Image (cartoon, rainbow, N blue to C red; front, side):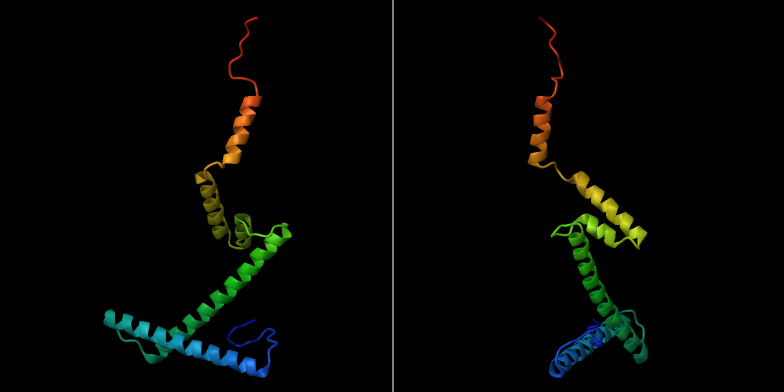
Length: 148
């Protein structure tokens, strides 16, 4: 669902819809004022002038980008949850995150590299150490005594 236009399945009452639209309008206006203030401050700092139509355009683009990122993050969270569920798990792991980046091979490669680096830095757990030490004690000794 688009949080700005309320398209995509909003099922609330007309009054709730008006409240949501009023809140969105208020957020958009506050965001616009903030971005205009930032743009004017940066222009003044760099001894530049920016025309009002350009400032308004920057503000609108920034707001649309922020909304898009919000919707994208929500979709990502849903995808990760579905990947974990499909694998029969209740929690998301690093493989789910890497799979979610499959369309962006550069990002997927970076995530894989990051994952391998994390695993390499991770100390062995106590269980793994105990298992490996018990295997060593059950195996053949490193020196065999052949005296009768």
